[in-house]
Length: 229
Image (cartoon, rainbow, N blue to C red):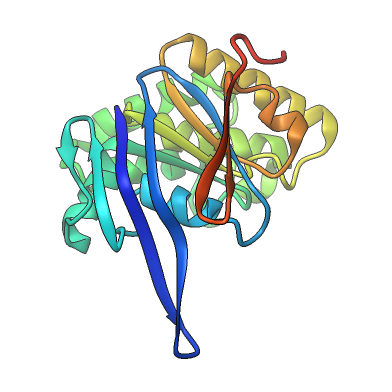
C-alpha cells in the first residue's frame, strides 16, 4: 500500500542544507497497524508529512496504492489526501460553528456527493465511533474524548486507504486515551490501515509494528504481533 524508495528531504536553513530524511526505504502493507516514533528533530514529522502527502520529497519515489505520488503538484496532492488518507490530529481541528454531523460531512463536500448521502455516511461513521446520540451537538458541548471520536469519524467517513493519526491522545487523560486506543484496535480489526505518530512508548506498544526514526533514517523496525490491549 505504501512504498518509499530512496526518499530524501532537504531544507536550506541559514545558508546550510539540512537533510531531514536520508535515503529512506519503507513498505507498509494493507491493514498494518504501525507506530511512527522518534525524538524531536529525528525526521519523524517530515516522514509523516510525506506519507500523508502533506509534503513532497526532494528525491526518491513514493508509491501509494500503486500510484506515484512523489512528484504530484499541490492540487493533485490535495485530491490524494481527500480520497486516500484520513487525518486525526492532537488538537482535533473541528470547526466550532458546525455540528458534529456537519463536521464529519466536510471531507465529502469535495467529492461531489449529494447532501443527503453525505449526511447518511457521516451518521454511519459517528455511530461506528459511539456518537450516534451526539449528532447535533457543537464541539464545545463535547468532552475531549468525544471530540477526538468526532475527528476519527471525520477521518474515516470516506473510507480512506490509510488512517494517519498524529499524537492522537496528546491532549487526553489516561482513561480517555485507553478508550481511543481501544477504538483504534477496533478499526484495525475491521480492516483499516493505521499509522500512529507518537512519542509515547505506551501508545506505540498498542501497535503491531514500531518504526523508530533517528537522524533521518529508519533506525529500528520492530514487529510485535497483537500489540498491547
